[in-house]
Image 1: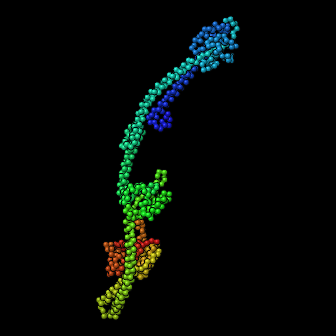
Image 2: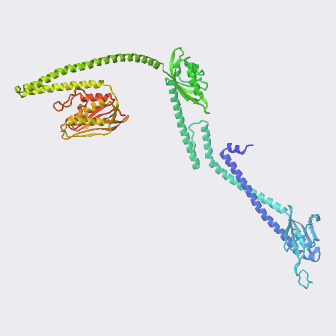
Image 3: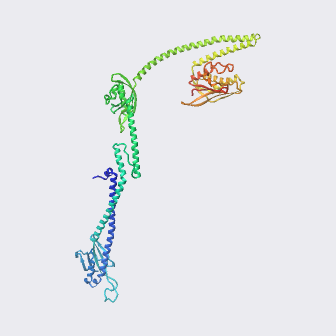
Length: 631
């Protein structure tokens, strides 16, 4: 026998609906029949009981003379009338004392010897009721005209009583008839209602049934199935949602197939070995690169321990790493290990693997990649050998260069000393000739000697600048936090003391600090501020600014220092010549100088790892920008 839960779980919706509605309708039909029968039985019962009381009252009125004269004959007609009713089974006429006058109907033994009726009753009433009959009692009352011989008017009094037993057979038949009739009517209407409801249910459930069939086909793996958009709106919405879901599933299935195909192509085409091992540490999955790297067939390797591939001296390391992953200590690992190819040669592998877990979270093995790094290892060994050889060569060349620099330095000082002596002699003799033979020389001669002395002085300055450039190139750097604002102020103070008559508006930003060699950076500021002072000399009011600004670059923000003036400026078309030694953008007849200063500045900035550049406008001033390391 099928249980209710099994029926609700396994039966179709339409069947469940039909069974539920049928049971409900039949239940309501039965309940309606019972309710109607109960209501009808009450009315029939009341009618029959009222009939019994009426019979008893009528018999009581017609039994007065019989009790007055104690003559049963006077009540014979009334008794026949009462007994003529189908359900009346027994009648009794008794005196007030209970003595019977007339008894008709059922045998005497059926008479009730219970208590006498109430003497004060004036109307018929139900004395007793059993499953088979009702027994009604009505008092027999005397009347004023009961006897024509009475002269004095008498009050109404109880002479006796009558009993009428009324069978319930009619009630039983009527109740059965009412119940069957109501039940038949209810069943007929229930059948008609179920028929109509069945048609409606079939119409309403057909889209659901069709949708269920389509879903079942889709569940079995059929593709391109679609539900028809029929039925009520919610069913159409369900069918539309199902169609959309199937379309999405088809797209995902297509994407999955393409992804699997792509994965298979990648899996088969990569040069690295892609592998999986099981929980016992045995090869489980290998791609074709395995054979290329190891020379071993895939079918010969699958099922064998992972450690069997590696060199004897490396197996302990591999097994230890695998044990750590099995115990959950490590989730992934990467190491380099030697392995033995099928031909017996030894190579190097870079192993990268991570833990795989099953659905319960237990260790299921590992996945990873084996990268053949044999060539890289050999190249590294060759590179190490080359580096060692290169280091030896560098040490040798460095020693040679240091010796060459020492010789060059000695030569520079020797040349400087040897050049300074004749220059001093030329300058001294020229000055003596100007002083001692001034009266014998004309203006042209004196001009020549002045030019000779000026050239020797420029030559001396050029020698000093070259020596300074060489010294800066070789000087040892001592970096420390340095206040550039204070250095710039000191340079401007010296320039102002040298030319107190100049009108110069100087602006030096406070807090300019960098981690530099203060001696070398002082050379930078001497040259840059000195150039600003020199090239703004023709301005009525010279303006010189030293400051810093922050600029954004691809690597982030950087601090940029600057020295700016409103002097002669220069043509940016020749900016690439600024930092070349002996390169000048102005003639010596305009501004003095040797062309070494900016080259020296660039050397210092480069040695600090910074950059320097310029921006200028002809007769509109110049700005020199440079970067230095921060604190």
